[in-house]
View (cartoon, rainbow, N blue to C red):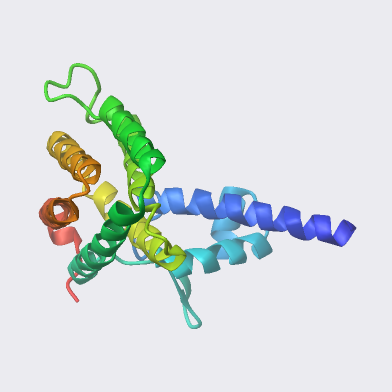
Length: 236
């Protein structure tokens, strides 16, 4: 029993550590290409090598770090090719998930989608900037959280655990690019309009319109991020 408790405690610590490292990668505290030596980062998070190794292995599955037998662990680089690949793959997977959710989603699903849209509305900076500071880190965090909750609810009725898993992985990778590009504050109101249009299409069970809006949203966002990041994106 003691050994079991130790394993559970270690697993919990590894999950907490995974969340902390992921947050530092997404925020840019840990930079693309930065080596993550255990001797350097274990003290940073106050952990030993074992939970650190487990956390890094899971982050490697997400594509946020690279494990290399020769040089060790590094934060994954960012590149124009990867940015375009991730967003184009999201279009394929999320279009399918959306169609399935529109077909399978019941009234409770639709009510949940409306609730997450209302939360997104609440945290979205207004055009005049009077209600919410569009440039603050807190705004970015709150908006990312609400946006994620909307997407989770939107695809929750697709009926495929694997599809949801792949979408989550790619979404986290896109968030890294989006946050690296800065606040993109001028896009908040456009994104809200697009999410509202997707909700209205869901309410009307109009999958074709929903997919069209979704594809436009992802493609335009990718171009905005690419333009904003500019030469900071590697060419491969």
